[in-house]
Amino acid sequence: MPLPASSDIVIVGAGAAGLAAAIFAGRARPGGGVVIVDGARTPGAKILVSGGGRCNVTNAVVAETDFWGASSHAVRRILRALPVPETTAFFAELGVPLHEEPDGKLFPDSNRARDVLEALVHGAAQAGTTLVPGARVERIARHGSGFIIDTGLGSIRAGAVVLAAGGQSLPKSGSDGSGYRLAMSLGHSIVAPTPALVPLRLAPDTPHSVHSGLSGVTVDAELALWIDGGLSIRLRGALLWTHFGISGPVVLNASRHWTRGTLLGRDVRLAANWYPGLRFDEVERSWIRAARERPGVTLRRALVPHLPDAMALAILGALALAPDRRAAELTREDRRRLVHALTDWPLPVVETRGYSYAEVTAGGVPLAEIDAATMESRVCPGLYLVGEILDVDGRIGGFNFQWAWCTAAIAGRGATRASTPPSG
Image (cartoon, rainbow, N blue to C red; front, top):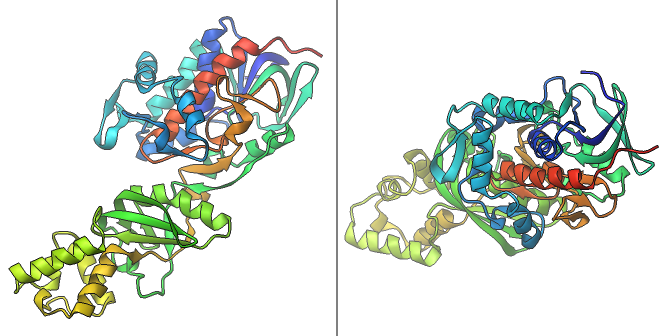
């Protein structure tokens, strides 16, 4: 598809947010006038790999508390623009009905991420928009009352620009952070980006580094993140031990907090409670009671109801406690040492696995620089920003896609109302 010389609206990026913005803008402006440019030859690679190739489109319940990075008030206002029922109706209209799975995750009935991508591309075409792949944007500059966008295929003038260039996660999909450079060139500041929803590497040589022998084991855990000695956040969910460290939903959700704290040079500590929801005193009382009521029970058998057997053995080994030792024979010191380990097990994180394994980017353009009613820039009129390029990231479970759909709906409609044919 050749690059037109001009368009009312140019959308930079044909990922989830960009394609959705094109649909909303095209429907609001019948007869064309919306062009999407993307550097990739085949856009939407990130959609295809999301959700294990099934695409977790959204969640049954979405609230501002599911997101980090910006004020809850602004996030709540944006989420109200496209509530979940309207999102599911939007996809049903595109031919992609959704079904609910555990934890409220909504997936396409076909369980195929490709169906989501193809529906978005087809929906954008039906809305009268023009998709130009292989047109990497190199520069955006003011031009008269509008903009001029320089791409690898030439230049195009626009009355309004929607910047949907994504962040830096999964760079093989085309998310290389170039959108930050474009936003900065138009006057925006950038909160330093870091990987988020990313597995964490653990030090291999500490007394608590048991991960290599537990690879593939999953356990319910409560993670506590401490920054400069103060509790920052507690999160609960499934933790997956791996050969390099830890992963699983609770770790992915905690990762952005670890990376942000580390980026700021703070003293960050991550610890796990293998008795989620219970504190030291409660767990100690349960061990005292178990020793009294079941004096013959071994440490290994006492742990198995709470932990996988391999984990029980690994923890006891790290503490130099014999698995067949009776719980009733524990000294007070050993009992308290064990309970402390069970409720505050250090996770010696040394780094994340990086953007190549991150599902999303934390950081980006501050939401304070955006008008939440239209997604228009407060520093560059006519510029709209959507999706991952903004300093808002959600927890795992479809929330980041919902953020993409909501910001796209607002920007698509807002850019349509505000745009005029480019002059100059």
